[in-house]
Length: 595
Image (tube, rainbow, N blue to C red; front, side, top):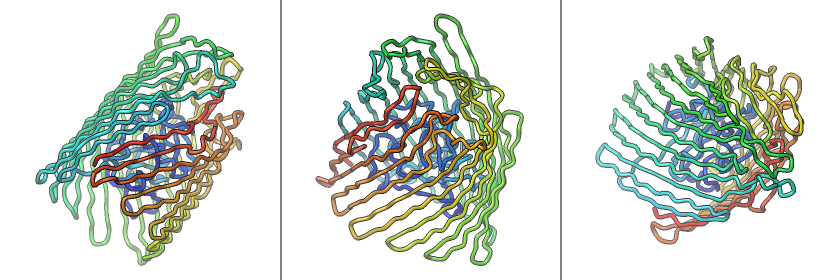
């Protein structure tokens, strides 16, 4: 709840507003791909990906669409209550103060969904008076309009933001296989939010509301989906040395989709069923922090109630309904204390998963450091309970059908990691080694496969291991700076097959120029070969793409900005359905921002 602890034995990456603005992408997920290990279930961008595939994977843990990473927005969980995925269209990258990415479960504060780590998004706090408006246009009929304001009056602050986007999208099926049933995949959305703050010296409070209306074309004449959701949240904190915080939130939403069967020549598209998924979640958390001499103690608890149903209207007739109510609650404690030159960390969580099962989640770690170096190590155990989506919802992607499984067990992870950080005035180097042991991993198991239909079911697979290393390097030279990151993750089932959707190698690099009124960045990111399925039958080759961004301040409050993704128009695969699906072609936008 709130800020991830900066002094932590975990590998923590912080992307501030300047870093986020130097990376292109309409939505936040495309900008976070510069963090090695961050990906959605597939390689697809949220510009065209079905929302149910937008769960987050970190450090080779993988995803089944449900996220194994907890995502917080101003302290409030934003993982979909029914399915665990994330609607990335909710967040305006230009209005984010920072994003903190913790790529492990080395703290016991976070419970379900944080099996592979946590990602915290923080909005820009209210200014005395600030307003902005921006319009960008680009190829593929892209139009992005955003605007908002913030006003601080004494100890009170009011802020509001909104953005709207539309594009004709692009074909996701290669030209050689494309038929009359294929259309462009695209998205249209409108996402406003408003927030009232009380910014006292010892007491702080906010009341926030955000909405999302989203429509998507999924690449064929019939396959479309839409979502409407709203969240109301409140957060109160008090004290300095002894800190108390209370959080509450309520989310209501409905996801609607149409599924079809595409003929072998892709010239006809036949409706198979329509689906409506209404869901809601109500949750809260309580946290107390106290410092006794040099020892810091933190304790708290959280609970959430989720209710949702998958209601399918079958063709030609019939109805199918699955879903229900899921309660989860837990208590946790965390402490850190000095021990000579070291700082020791201990944590514990006891959690009721909502399936008549309880989970014990301990963690421990240490850091040893001086002004220019830091050594860190940690060990932890974490879990993830199956979502209502995995338990009760059937879905179809192309000619691949995935069945639910009401008998799924919670997943668990036992992890070890150690790292070294070297810090200087103009440079930074970080190295992390890790090993994770996963049990009862929920994955899509192939039951049968023919050219006409692939049938899969969510099941608890055999145990799996993920081990590897992360390297991060940053260097600054006057007006220039450079950064590079690399992740090696060997993630395999105990039967030695590779985990689906996880490349062994990922990397990114960026060269930045910033001086006076001009900022420019040239970047590169790459993904190694990975597999689409549990049998390792569908191979997705590796690829690399370049991007470029530039901003030029024209006058005091007006700037010109340019963003280009996939600069050299590289063609690459993001999945099979079983037809190969393509990633985003070159996308560019240019526009003006008044601030």
